[in-house]
Image: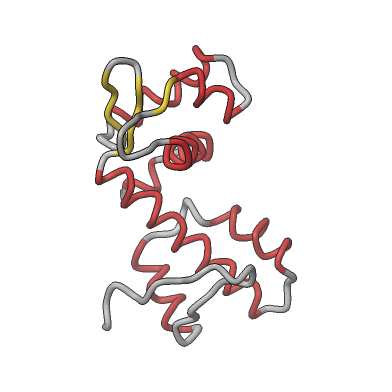
Length: 140
């Protein structure tokens, strides 16, 4: 099972909260993560701890930062989501509906399936919201 497929939606949101708040010089406090997720710090810690165990974040002096693997996982998620949105958009759904439909499957589908969807859609370059979709990772 791929790393992305092991994550819960809340764990993914935790990674995204860290990514959006960390800087090159500072990590993100548990209090800030909790506020971003609208949770108490102990509840947020329940999402942070498994991410650290998976090697997706590092913690130092109470601050969390994405590891290279964590950053790659967030980027991978964005690609999964945007390719899925593009698929649903090609079926005639509007941008809001494509996002909702993509959220139903984006954590569950494998890299291989995303690449096959991308090829089947003739390599879309952006999702229905206009966000970029990177090129396929394989050419097979």
